[in-house]
Length: 109
Image (cartoon, rainbow, N blue to C red; front, side):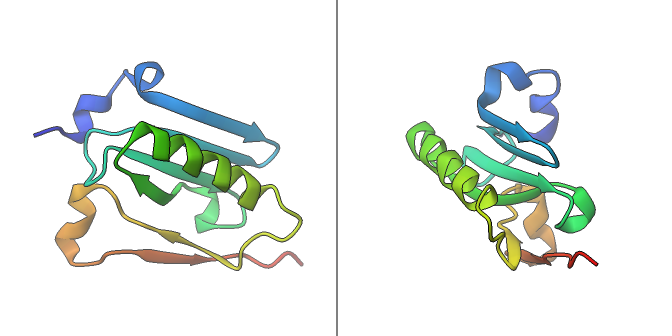
């Protein structure tokens, strides 16, 4: 069984795609602790206090690449989504019985 610690220090080998723009990071990579092999995470100050939200998980590298492109389109549009759902791909995240978490977009004042 793979584990979270199996990913330590190995990001460059696991990376599929990474997008960075002011205040936004979208990262898609191979994971060793997930129910699915690949996942896309979004880091944006308007969601989850700027911490990562794992927005989608995939079984193939090809699906991961397509998903990454999709999330760039979503997160760089003029209208950000009202919320992001964390798909909780990590196996350990399911120990509490949850299957997803929703992060509502923080309103700008």
